[in-house]
Length: 332
Image (tube, rainbow, N blue to C red; front, top):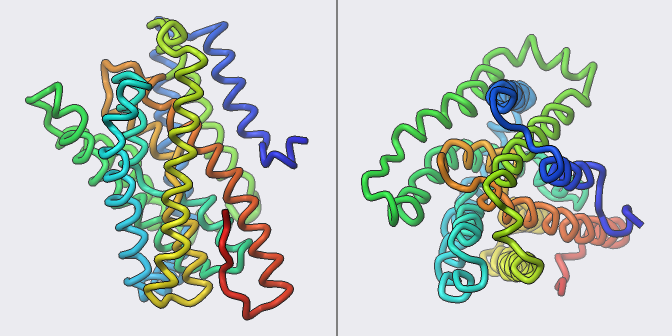
């Protein structure tokens, strides 16, 4: 049943972290130590991501600058515009903090691992996906704080300066990534012997951040602020957002003349938002805010996107195996 619903072990662990934080929230000195360990785990994760990224794939992928421009437009223009236009509808339904979380999700870069994985399964341009997803995450370290400053925190904190947040994000995410690239000749051979190590840090660091964030939120009264109806509205909002973006990401590349592999790459890289980078960024950007409410939308969107993309990637893979020349067909 879990396989049929495209629900993996990681999703169940995310739910478990929320339940655990609800029952046994961490606080006091233990929370300070736990947050320090979480920060270290995230830095190691991005170091491993840097060491894993092939320079040959980057060089090959950079040649498709038109593809990257389309992905960039979807990620940092279309998503934010939809999120901002939806404010009159979503703000009364979700409340201020949850709407901030929804808008913050729209400002985030694309995923890396899942974008590459789904592109590969659906027989897309994997090299371009590696480059596009990685570039999205790197540029997002600068663009996301600026968008948050201008459209969220700048509305309530008129003296908010994104510079310090950008510096913290660069120190936590970008510098370890670059260091991993520099040390790739020595680190990657060891990683190849233990391919599960990146996955372990990827999932483990996110689980730690989610537990810490929801512990603070529970102590601050999270479940007194979010009822079942509000949660339903949030799920519907995420589903509608994903549907709109996916429809545009499927048909626009055709109109722009991209071939089938590039269409697949644009579809999967343009329609997703990162949980791995999003939660650490939220910790830095929303200091003093109810972090549990801020990260709840991206957690929900993350699972919906994985379920939908898993089904579509499998179907496109079967289509390509049956008729190699078949172009992307309409998905409802």
